[in-house]
Image (cartoon, rainbow, N blue to C red; front, top):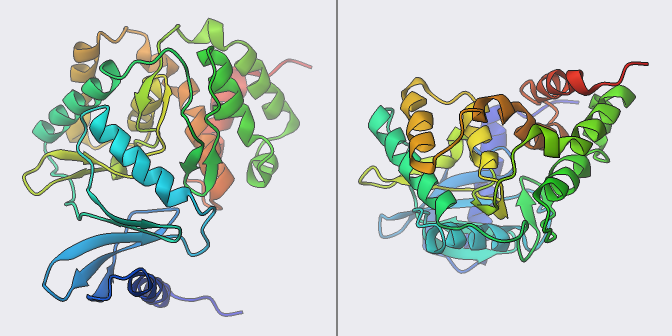
Length: 303
């Protein structure tokens, strides 16, 4: 069986997006250029007849009719509730999301210092009495369950960690001892993590989801929002190879939020949620399964 090369796959993806844009009524789009970076969906920059452009993304096979509606709602929540800059939604449909285009983030420390202010404002101004969200949404191609809980430890254990164990790729990657270790860790979460309030989080805050507006203002994309621990966002930035210019980001965020000194030690535990999600969805997990097993090793029970 022959495999498509990268160029053919990109051409097919942009043709798919162009067809969907025209079907959705944006018939003035004359071309779509492939955009790199996303893992779950195909994306492109669509050029319109008047010379302007919009960003467009779609799933080859959508996981649900509400995936893009939930994402658009998340962008709105980050902006209206948390004061973050997000791209304007041009059109949302079951198989298509069209957004205002953004620019790649600048590679300088000042930009990341502005990001620290953005994230600190989001987390400190949106505290909530419960953990969850009023609807489920999507983390990549998998549903993120957001059933309300009063207990943050129970919410995180059930809906952010243990829910991944039945995913086929996770079941294949984790042995019986690893699964038992995760269950043991979940039972001990109140001992391992401090009691913290819920706040609105982006939910998928790796460096690739931080962009910039034309004037260099940080802008957030691709959220999977909920009310949970702020550590969820911090852990994702911390453990996904932030660029060297982001060093000041963490110290400034800690200063702005009054973050305790022990935050670095708990990042691997909080990031288990994202590692599980990556293993569940991708054949190449970028080392996530190894990171999972390393974090779980101290929680394996001796025979």
